[in-house]
Image 1 (tube, rainbow, N blue to C red):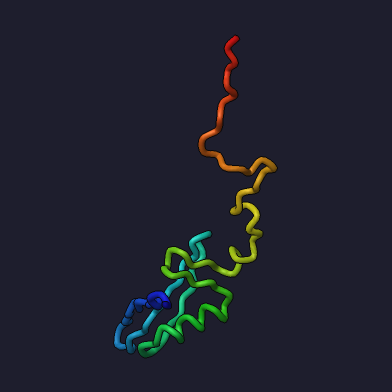
Image 2: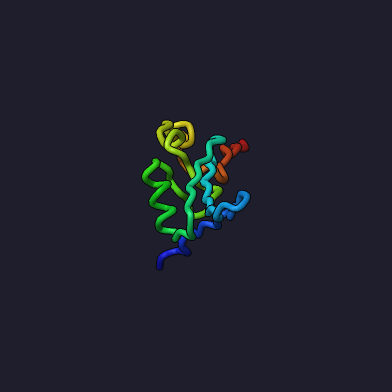
Length: 101
């Protein structure tokens, strides 16, 4: 079952007597970069997604998970934990039993 589709909320701006502009902004969750798509009329979510995808963005399920192309290009090794040789379960470990003579 597919999840809920990502929806973009436009910021509607008007300057003087000029027609309104519909502005959609993506903010990277890994760095301070932002990118904006402006349209002269309301735009659908698929059009906005396509614009950001063409510019190299990875749009997450929510705006808190968006990544710009520069952050996508970074190696992911730093984010993934390295497994050691003794990567067994770390829960309860048995203590060696004491032998009473």
